[in-house]
Structures are given as C-alpha cells and as structure tokens.
View 1 (tube, rainbow, N blue to C red):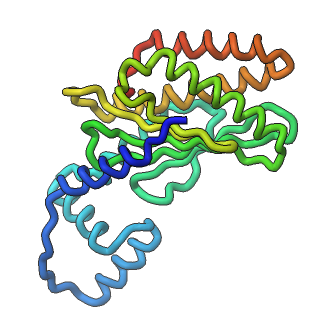
View 2 (spheres, rainbow, N blue to C red):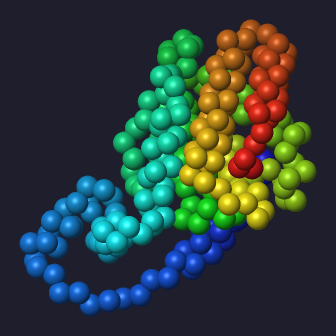
Length: 236
C-alpha cells in the first residue's frame, strides 16, 4: 500500500500559497449580505469566496472554482448512461455512482476532488463500495489489489516513490499528476479522469462477471487495462 497523504497535503499548501489574496473593506447593504450568505450556505462555500466568484465572473476572470465547475461539467458529459452524477458538496468535488450487476445490486461511488492549481497535482479519486456484504467487500478488495499491481507494473517508472494510491477495506484512493512541463486544458483533465473512471468501472464489472474463475477474471482485467493504456495517458 502506497501512502499519498503527505504528498497531497504539501501540494495543497503550496497551491493555496500561490493564490494571492488580500483583505479589503467593502460597504454592502445588509439585505445584499443576507442574500449572499443564504446562497453561500446553499453552495457550501464562504461569503468571501462567493463574492470573489461573482466579481471574477463579472470581470470575466477565470477563477480556480469556475475552472473546476467546467471540468466537472465536461466529465459529466463524457460519462455514459450507467453513471449517475450526485449533488456536488462543493466546487472542488464531484461524486458519481455506478450500479454493479451483481446480487444485492451494490453501488460503486467515485468521488473526485480537484486541486486549485493544475500544475503538478491535478486531483484525487476516491472509490468506495456501498454494501453490507462482507463477501462483496472481500471481492472488491481482491480487485483493488489486482488493480494496484497493474498500476505498479506499468506506471511505477513514472513515480520515484511509487504510484500514489491507497487501499483500505472496500476503498481505493488514487492521486493524479500532470506530466512535468505540461499545460493541460480542461478537456485534457476531464478526458483523462473520465477515461480512468470508465476503465476502472468496466474492469470491476468484468472482474465480478468472472468471479467464479479468479484467474480468468484477472487475465481479462489485465487485458482491458492494457488497452486503456495504449490509448495514451495524459494525466498520470
């Protein structure tokens, strides 16, 4: 198991420090502030952040929050009908769920968190399984171990400290990085994350479809993962 929390926290601190912010005094009407507060609460953000977004949009300035929303919108457009987008808890997060064609009809949840600075660290994906069945959790853990081995086999040369993933009971976390010196567009990031989720979801389904024959399941998942890599990986 590779730990990525330390890398993630350092990058978040670095990204936040790059955003130049100052304290300004503004005279606003009380009813305007009340309306802003209500809207900020409904959007799970702060008063200052919401005012900053409104002013940035007014002067046509692209903020990190606006770019995140645009990337999430593109990801949602890319996902096929088997995926359902859930309500976003914040501008920086997006959750998608997918039903697994298996007994008890469990649900797989994919949560995406984007960083404010798209140079270096791009974001994090958390995959979780909604089920009370210990058997299904054990099967999913076996799949995650297989997936991690494939990532290590094909991508470890790109990371000096190992592929940035974590595994836990019924959970998998993967950090995404932009290649050095790259300038990724919103489409690049959306396509890369969307393709990764689609590939993993298809592989999970394939693994469970062949659960009675573990060796066959592992072979088919490996073949599908290799086909995914051959298309080209924009985000690592």
